[in-house]
Amino acid sequence: MARSDEYSRLAQLVSATRETSGDLFGTAIVDWLRQHVDFDHCVIFGYRGASRPPLLFETFSPAESHVFVALYQEGPYLLDPFHHAAVERKEGFWRMRELAPDRFYASEYFRSYYSQTRLAEEVGFFVPLPGKDALVLSLMRLSASGPFGTADARLLRDMAPAVISFIRLRWPALPADEPAEAKQGEEIAAVNEFDRAHIWQSLSLTPREKHVVDLVLQGHSTESIARAMRIVPGTVKVHRRNIYRKLKIKSQAGLFARFVEIIDARPR
Image (cartoon, rainbow, N blue to C red; front, side, top):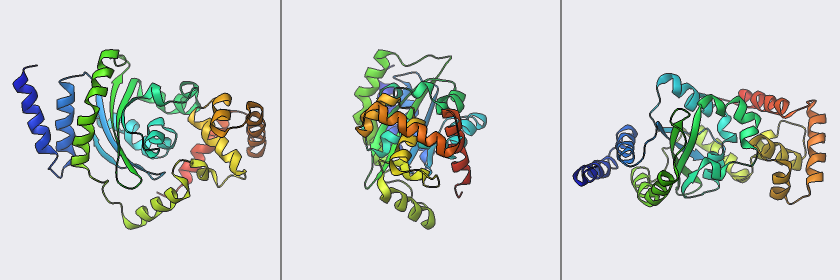
């Protein structure tokens, strides 16, 4: 790439940070990033606690958008490692493999939803915003393209400070929700932005059992749950047996089915 092309695209990107249209900025930053690294798709989501994440930009076709955006916003985002990292206010460049729990790729969430995306790899730039909000710009490579190479990931990590600065110039804060939705989001975040156990409040489980449910559905193994909760693996197994007995289920598939029931019942 000629140096003049690089500077021209940077100039366009700087100008786009002043525009009110997210599409103009998104197109400009995708164009700039693609001069350095190949990828198939880009999507930008805002995250506000456990609230439904607003879409700020996408490069998907309508059919792809149904899976990557519409279905995702219905509830699977709650189990997404990127969502969890965003509300925990991680900053910088991260690969999915660096954030995913140890059993993520064998989880029911992965089999039932994430596998539909047919991704080889997803990486993201994580941008904490004022208050408890955050924004994530994700770059995706489909299975046909293969995962990002080591050199590509290293370059993207080096570019992260600039990408994050551009994003903050364009979105100093997330777009305002409708008053009722904003209030709901504040109430959810007030419970505990790091602990989604309250999502399972409709189930007749103890607080610890709800926490176990949350971690199991994210894709944590028994050993990983034990470390996260600072208990021994045997206690985790007891909690899981009690959860399955109370919910009258026999497997993680049954637990995921209950999760789907809960998110389907949530107010739209």
